[in-house]
Every structure is written in structure tokens, then in C-alpha cells.
Image 1 (tube, rainbow, N blue to C red):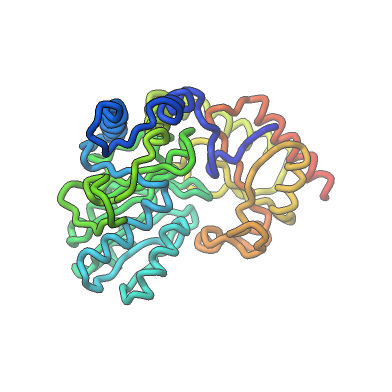
Image 2: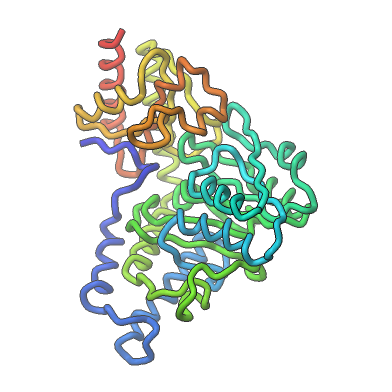
Length: 374
């Protein structure tokens, strides 16, 4: 098996798994309880918050644990709208993850205006575009740090500065970026940031939302006093610990992983070019390491996905929004991908466990399938 869909999810890190086990089998106390049995759990929760905060250069009390990126995105969009009780507009982009887009649709139904910024053919939100459409009445700007389909990294620090100049808050969906590129919140200048553990070799069902101190956001859940009374519910300590170990390991090896993944990318693209495969490489030169979105003329991405599947190679198709759909994704539509190429889009997302041999096998399989299709 060759797994090359790491933008969808990643393999759980073995050290993260081992770190989780005691909090599932032995130290299973409720962190909210005052007795001795819960002390180790409280300590683990505190230390995890401190380590995660240090990984993105924020204060520990600005980290709120969530069930993952989708919840964090929903909380940022809906929580900011509800707290102010007004109908000031929100700005986002056309290529955001559906966790953002559908959250924006939800607040639109409640009477909150939302505008969707256009992107370049490389999938970049230009600072001039934001500057053109933002007004002093804008409440929130939400732009993803890196796109999940084509990997493009956005000029977040410039965009956040424009938002702040106009009195707006700035949120970034950093689900594809945290643990894969250096993320320093102070340099980015954002007010909120979403992350999800299973994208950086942590467990599924856990993530966090960074909220800058002083930003008013409506509590996600009502109930107990967990997460500073902002997200009621007993903490998933085992998963939080696993997320922390995985993030720390990935952050410590980012430079090494980045260099290796760029080498693997170059190898894959070079082999396809040498085989004279006609394709377009999607996204910007500044992209998430290992994210390779290509659109091949005259074939269907679904066909490629299933033929590769039969060979034990797992990638995703970029031509459908959801499984079973033949509609082009909103991202490909937004970057004006020519129709004859768009339908043949696949995303190969390499991770830290992929090897040179994997890439050679993937490219050989693609070339074989495409030559047979001619």
C-alpha cells in the first residue's frame, strides 16, 4: 500500500499513541474533579496547553481545545457574529474549506452579510483585492492559511494588517498548515486560528482554536466551566495529549520534512514531464510541502483514482466536491481551470512517511494508466 492522501488525514504517530494510552487505561480521572486521582490529568491538560501554545507562539490561556478543525472554524465564524449582536458583514474567499463556507451560509440565513473574495489563477487572495472590498463596517475577515486542494499559502500577515487597519478581526483556517510549515501567530498577526490534530499525525476528533486575548467570542457550549467556561464538556485528555506529542514532533522536524518533500515533489513532476504527460500543476509556487494537485487533459480524475486504487495507491480526486459527485470543486472553478483539464484533476499529498520509492511507484502507475488510455 502507498498512502498519498495526507491532506485528508495522516497516520497516527506511534509516540502520540503511546502517550495517549495511560489516559485511556490508567489515569482516566475527570480533570474537573478536586481529588488526588485527577491531579495527573489536570497536569497533563495544563502542560499540553503550554506546549501547543509554544509551538505557535501564543499564550496558553489563548488556546481552546475543540473536536477538530470543523468545530474550530464554526466557532470562529458563528461565535464572532453572535457575540456582537449586530449584522456587520463578514469577508471570506471563494476557495475556503466547506467548514468556513457552510458556516458563512448559516450566518447569512440569520441576516449577517457575507462577501466572497475572488482569487488569482494560482489560488492567491491578493492584498489589493481585500483592500478594495473591506470597509470600516466589516466585522470579520476569514482567509485560510493554506488551501487543502491546491496547497497555496496565502499572504496572511498582509491580509491581517489590512483587516486591522479597517477595524475588523482576522481568522485563519490553518488546518493544512499547522505542523507542516512554521506558524508563528505573532508574525501572522491573526486574532483567531483553527487547527486539527489528524492533519499532523495526531488522533482524529481533537483540535484547537486560538483566540487572542481580548477578542470577544460567544461560548461554543453552555454547561460546565471547562475551557474557561467557553466550551463546556469533559475534556478529551487522552486525545489532547496525543495531539500535543504529534504537534511537537512535527514542529521540531519541519525544516527536514520540508526539504525532503520538495525533493519528492520535484521527482514526481519531473518523471511525468519526461513521460510527456500533458498536465497543469495547480496552486502557487509558495505551497504546502508535498501537496501536488495536477490536472491532466482528456481523462477523468475519478478514473485515475480508481485505477490507482486497484494498484494499492491512494490519492484523492480534485474534480468532485464530495464522493459520488461529478461537479467540479469550488476551488477549481474559482481558479478558472479549463474544463478539459479540470475533470482530470487529482491531488497527491505526500507526508513524512512517504519515500522516493513511493513516488517512483506512483509516477510509474500514472504513466502506465495514461498511456493505456491514449
